[in-house]
Each structure stands twice: as C-alpha cells, then as structure tokens.
Image (cartoon, rainbow, N blue to C red):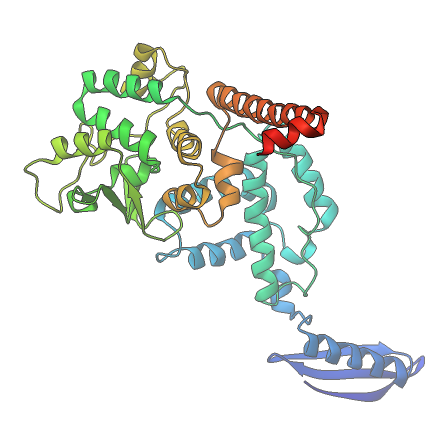
Length: 391
C-alpha cells in the first residue's frame, strides 16, 4: 500500500490530507488538524491492509442477496446435489431473503441477527431455524473470504439458536420386520424385498432404491453400496452415497433368498427395484395422516407401530448390535465415520433388550452369590475336613 501525507491551507489554518492507493482503490481523505493525526490514519489503513481487514468502498455496497448468488454458484457444478440446492433455495426464498436480501452486508449487526432468530423461532421448528441461520452464516463467512467483511466480524458468531429436542430412535423387532415385509409383498413382491433390505441390511432408502443387479453378490452374501437416488418433487438425482464412501453390507439368508428370486434373469446393470408408475424409482413413503401408501398400509396390516421408513435403518443397527455385539462391524455396515453415531443416533433399546440386560445382570449376580457362598462354606469348614476336601 502506497500513501502520502500533505498539508494544505484553509481559512481556519493549516490542515492535513492523506492520499493512498489500496487494492486499486485511490483514496483521498482531508481535514486532519495535525500531521500526527493524518499519519495515524494512514498507519491504521496500512495495518488493515496487512491484516486483511481493509474494506474497499465498492465492497461496502454489496448486499446479502448479491453474496448469496456467489455462494449458490460455489455450491453448484456437482459440489452439492441438485436436490440439496433446491432445498437450500427454498429456505433462502422463504426465510432469509425477505429479511436480509436487500441489506448491505457491512451494515448488519449481531443484535439484529439474534432478534431475527428469536422471531423466526416463534413460527418455525428449531431445525428450520437452524437451516435458515446456516445459510446466512455461510453468506457472512464467504463475505469475510471475499474481503467484504473484516476478519472476525461475522455478525452470526455466537448466536444463540433454539435447542433441538433429540428424538429417540425408533426400531422394530425381528418379528415385526418379517410381518411388515410379508404384508408389503401382498401389495407388490418388490416391496417385500425392499423392506427386508432396509430392515435387515441397514441401507438408507436412497441407497436401496438405487441398487442394480451387479451390486448384489449372491456368492458371498453381500450387497455393494455405491450410489444413492434422491427425489425432489418430480426430479430424481443419482449420485454417490451420503458419505461418498462405498461399502459392503452382509446379507442374512432371508434377504439373499428374496433378492435372488427378484433379480433372477435380469441383466447386470438393471435396477433391483423397478419404479412406481411413471417414476424411475420406488417413491419415498410417509406415515403422515394425509398419506395412504403401500408402506403405511403394510404397517397397519402387520399390526406394527407406525414408525417412518427410516426406522428400518435404526432397526438394523439395534438388532445387529443385540445379535452380534460387534459395534465396529455394525458401524461399517451402516457407513458411519464413527461408532458414536451408530450408538447415539441409530441404536435404540427395545423391551426385549432390556429383558436380556436384566437377565444377564441377574445371572451375573447369581454367579457372584454362588461364589461367595462357596467361599464362606470353605472358610467355615474345620481344618481336618478342609484338608480332606482339598485332598
């Protein structure tokens, strides 16, 4: 940064002015009453430039909406799935743009953001508030990188968000999964197989419906999970898995048998699960009151709890942990980066597991009492008899 300090005369006496060029911006500042004041101003701007906190005048005029366009462009081109971008656009359009779109980024203050979050919380769920806030926060972080905001000046920092109530994971029993599958099979045989794959292999819905015949390894009782399909309105996207990591999932015999029958005679690249109606894939199901799809009908017919389809994934985690006790294997099958997510988010305790836990505790206590009683008998036995027992 180049700058000079010069004096000039006014009717009130001598004054000082500063000239400097920074990031192709030529700045002229007048009215300093002393050379020291002018030099201090120039030094301050020099420090701002060296520390990355200097903001040019043209960037002071940039609005939140203008920077959102930059953020959106950075998210497109394969960085995020189209379905994710559509959801992000909807949140921006409904919750962020009306309040912040026209505002200049440099004029937004922490207190305004906190008040907006509080107001939004009156009508929206904690998760919806968090999504809207996340977009604004990402815009502000990008503004810092683009030198629109000084470093450390994000007005979204340290904002208090509404607490999200942690929903307890829901899980079916072995018997319930089998009954649901049988009832689904009466509607369409592919639905029986889909339920078994979801409940006994732990695939995500999008991963299951994206399976092709060559993903099913009947020789080794394995499913290769390499892709996922997502629906947004009438549009579908097929991409890698949620974590962008392929994985191999073991198949129980009931799943292997069902899949073998379903894909018999099909070509390797064809889909395992044919689409519903004019859709290329089976349509995501719901248990909401206004829905009456095959999944909900199957739950009712099976006399099973009205849990959403994602409960089948937590069912797999719960039942697999109870059956094997191998947390690492279940984590890998679920495609989780950490075992903590497997246990904290997906695994749940069923009445049967509590009964087994109680029984195992009772067994351990009984064994301990038996050992204590034996020790007491040995300690109270006369020496000559004890020698005979030891002999």
